[in-house]
Image 1: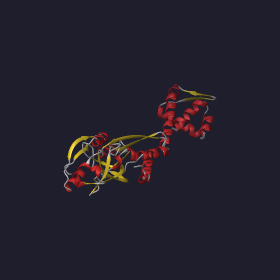
Image 2 (image 1 turned 120 degrees about the horizontal axis):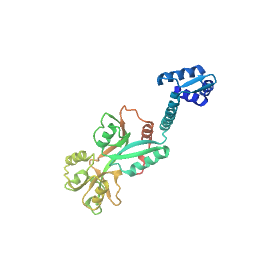
Image 3 (image 1 turned 180 degrees about the horizontal axis):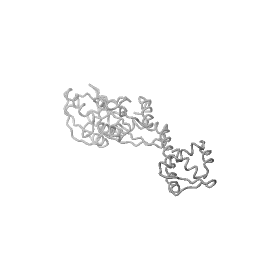
Image 4 (image 1 turned 135 degrees about the vertical axis):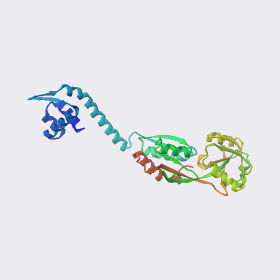
Length: 293
């Protein structure tokens, strides 16, 4: 790049002494650099005839190409500096589909205020899908939880815990109680969300308590599941901060209580861009206990 800068300086001044001064180098250093560039390109770039320094045919041909190289290089450096400053960068964030927006939106608002030039691209999916996208580099960072330990390929840090609750429509027998025991779910109609990462885990607990439920409706959309429970088809088993349907009657699930831990997850050992570091710092420092619920 020094050779290109020196070459273009001589093109502007047609004087090696003035070009060296403008580049803040000695004339011998500039001359050696030009000679090195000529060796690489296979011929002389300038003719020096007393006070008549001018470009050769090769020099004329190379000038626009090398000018463009310098422009692109300077643009790339500025882009890199902007990236390090978190200016106009994209952060690909995966959020588990069962994490309710009302719990997470306050954090995203705060992050946006502190880093207004980081463009968040949010993708949702199951915990297994998010893990796959993280591993393949399709996501920079993800937020999810699961009953089993997170794979050792990933680095996971706890954000908050969230209880599971029972949601029913008005008039359901559970509407008349303060809490629902797992045993109370026996032979009850169950409105199930298809992509429930705790479905198997909860099912084992229900069976241990002697409860066998009857699935009467299934959907991969939370709004449909909550709407059908609201309509009286049966109960739904849902994270407490994922409840979005107005009027849905929500009761704590007890004996035993089922809780999940929501974590921020990155790929262990992978070099991360500055925006990922900023996101992880902010999400760990956020006061989740005081967040809107």
